[in-house]
Length: 463
Image (cartoon, rainbow, N blue to C red; front, side, top):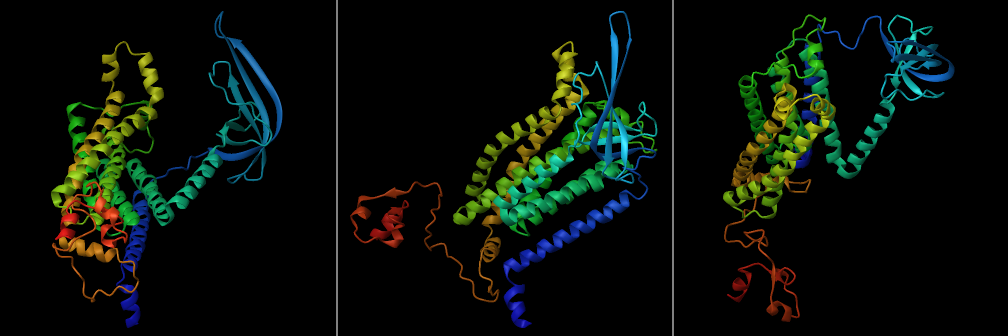
């Protein structure tokens, strides 16, 4: 037992594994407990007297058409295609039912014609559609998305190995936090502002501990990301009051006000959740980029000072900021492209278009997210520079990088003194130079680094 403790209990790999196991278990327990709390009195995904089942078309029956005049020049035509299908899910599984697909001459993009073997979604609302009890609701597309998701997971594991596995686990916990806790809590009437902040804190800590472990890199990223999310939340609260937002940004917002659950949802708080959760992903990306880059830079060039490392972080952050700002703007434009096209068509002026609340909210998402990224840069760089150049953290980092499974914490640790020369230059961007003197040497000197030297090395050799 003593030998086991000495060999495994104190190794960095073993400690990392313990942290990973504890993080996964605690994250799972928190998700299950929170889900039970927020869904205690909530009834969702259980519509009464309505069924939506997956089915497979077994035969095409007949087509009925009817038409009537709406006016002298307008004629309405209604077509109804009957088919038989076998139910594949639910309590009607295995039964063959009669279904109907309806279409008319006013539908701009009608459904594609059905054929035998197609998998579809059928609805049954308790009322007949002509002679059929089931109504065609659309082609079943989930199978294709599952295949694409599996392909994505395989590619992530192939290229990322264990990092890819950790990414998949953290992504699963993130989705569970949003759809099993945050969304039900909103429908149950919980405070959206509080639940948004709790969700962000959970996702940030869980993701970084699973993907990076309990390291200085994870700590600096957590601190920088938390600060960026706090900036986004403060800006949203200020603009929400200053711009006098109502929360009614589309027809979906209006429908939320007519839910028969008896819960009144604060529509303005939903804007807060949209913006803060949306900004969290971009801020986390930037914080990790800077933290990881400075961590690797300091590991390769340990002689860098706080100021030099901080300036490198700012330089890296500027490059990341330019692309991430575009990413946010393009993502929000792409997600609401149809709405933008419709509003442009029916707006009388650009001033009216930009003053609409749904457009204002889209602009707020892009600007607040970009501002959070901008302010995350210097803080993350400062935290990384302080921790990475701190001697106590440096010693911890050297121990963590030890690949040996037999690491003994009681063994003496050799600390490099300032006068010891390093093959890494003080300025990592110093250009390597080649001299005629080293070219003339028949025997290669290992200290010359394959014929290259850094500024100052030649003077040391001559001495």
